[in-house]
Length: 115
Length: 113
Image 1: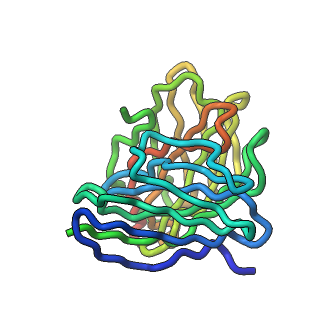
Image 2 (image 1 turned 90 degrees about the vertical axis):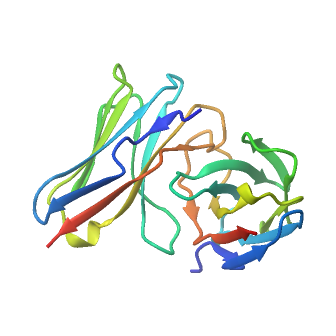
C-alpha cells in the first residue's frame, strides 16, 4: 500500500517564477492538506482540498493556490515566488472531512529553494 | 501568532530513562491534540493523540498528559530508546475546522545509548 507521495523531491527556482508541486494521497484517502515548513519552524497549514474544492485555508496569500483532481491527487501552485517561500512543503492525506478527527498521513515533502 | 509553542528546541536523554517533551498552547478553543514524530527526509508520522475531554492517554511506552487549565500538554516516553531520536511536534486543532492543525516548532530528542 503506497503511502503519500510527493514530487519533485527538490526544486530550485528564482524570485518571480511560478512553481507547481504534486501530491498523491494514500490509497483510499480523499482529502489532501498542504503545509509549509520553514527552517526551524513547525508545519503551517496552507489549505485543504476535499471533493475537488478548497474547504479550509490558512493565513497564506492568494499567490498560493491549489487544485484537486478526480483521482484525489492534488497540486500546490505558488506564483511570483519570494525568497521567503523557501521551505519544505508537506502534503498530508486523510479520509473525509472531520466531524471526528481523522489521522493525517504525511508525505516526505518537497524542498523548495528560491534564489 | 504562534498558538502552539514548544519552548525546548532540543532534549538529550540516556537510554532507558524517561523523556518528557512539553508543549503549551494559547487558544482555549483547541479540543484535540496530537504528537507527531519526524525523522530526517521523512514526513511527520502520527504518534499519539488526546481529546480535551481526557487528561491522559497512554499507548505502550508513550503517554500524553493534558492540563487544560494550564493550556499545557506533555509527552512522556518510558523507557526511552535510541530509535526514539527524532524531532517531535505537538499539534492542536479547534472543532469544525476539518483537520486544520496548528503545529509547534518541534523538539529534537536525542536518546544516548
